[in-house]
Image (cartoon, rainbow, N blue to C red; front, side, top):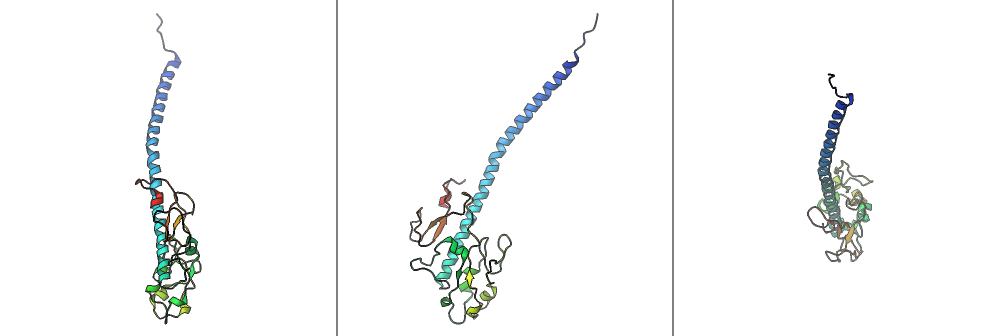
Length: 217
C-alpha cells in the first residue's frame, strides 16, 4: 500500500495563516495604543498653550502697570482722561520719552525708575537678561547707573523707555490680537472704549481644561 503524503503547499498555507493572524493582532494592539496616546498628546499641547497664555497675559499686565507707575510719577506724559494708562499696546512696544518735569532737581531717584528697569520676556529693561537670555536691545541706553545713583543730571537719563519687546501672539488664536478694556469700561466688557488700555484678555471663546473660558483669564 502506498503511503499518503501531504502536498508540498499544505505546510506553507498553515504557516502563512498563522503569520496573518499575528499581523492582525499586532495592528490591533497598535491601534489601541495610539488611540490612547493621541488624547494624552493633545492634552499636553493644550496645557502648554495655556501656560503660554497665562505668561503672556501676566507680562502685558505688568507692562501696563509699570507704564502707569511711571506716568503717576510724572516721568512720562499722558493724554488727559487716560488716567495715566497707555493708549494702546503698541505704545508699550514703541516706547515713551522720559519727561524732564518728573525728574525734579538733581536727577531721578532709584524708586522713580524702578518700573522702567524691569526686564521680562517681552520687556527691554536695564541690561538684565530676559527669559531667552537677551538683555536691553533696540537702542535703549542702560539704566543701571541711573538707578544706582541719585543726583544724576537729565543728560544721563534714557531718551526712551520700552515696556514690551513685542506684542505676543495669542497661543489660542494664533494672532497678536487681544481684547482690550479701558479703565472706564465694565470689568466684563467685550467692547473697548478706546481711550486707554487698563486690561487685556484673550479673544478665544474656547473652554480651558479647568472649565473656564480663556477670555475670562
